[in-house]
Image 1 (cartoon, rainbow, N blue to C red):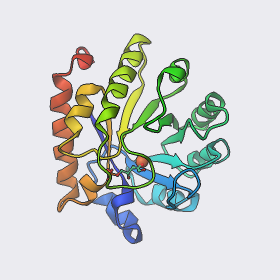
Image 2: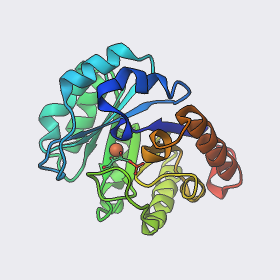
Image 3: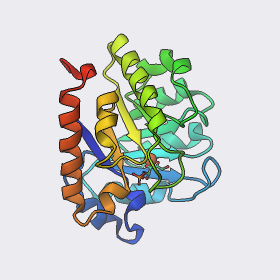
Image 4: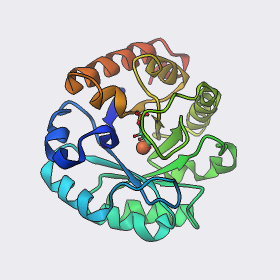
Length: 227
Ligand SMILES: O=C(CO)[C@@H](O)[C@H](O)COP(=O)(O)O
Ligand SMILES: [Fe+2]
């Protein structure tokens, strides 16, 4: 089953509760936390996540683009996030951090920037509930999808199959009607979309349409046989 996670980075920050309701059919709401250090942009932090978690029934998928996630990620679980993603490039102790996120009751997820390979982290995969492959440089919404990430998505899907893991594979950045099928064919099953959802006249219809495209592409993908 393809999951569609609208990114509220492209929503109206003054109306976050309403913007969450506008995508009621979404699987998760993707919340981009940026600290102006790990990435050159600043968004929101723990208090807003806490308020948003109270304001919506849709679970929150927090993508932490911050330094020192070892210190901060557990606080996002306590704030009500159902899934917390840290960047491996920023984490001091990724295994310990993933275990702490899980122990606190959320799904643990690790993200790779475009230039970070998956291979060195093969042995970490069983510690995770989701792996996020960035398909743009993190920091901003509305960027063009990086096609050169498709082989990394394919290789990661092969590793997940090889180890028989129930790991979700998320893609984030430039995911839209024109790119989602290629991501699904390559092996992604969780799709973050910011501008393609909140830039649409009808965000809920955009979620449904992206889901239909992803599911059709997955159905004919070799990796998904018997999935
Ligand atoms: O993490 C990020 C950007 O760093 C994303 O979650 C963006 O918010 C995706 O926006 P679009 O590329 O879909 O417009
Ligand atoms: Fe994101």
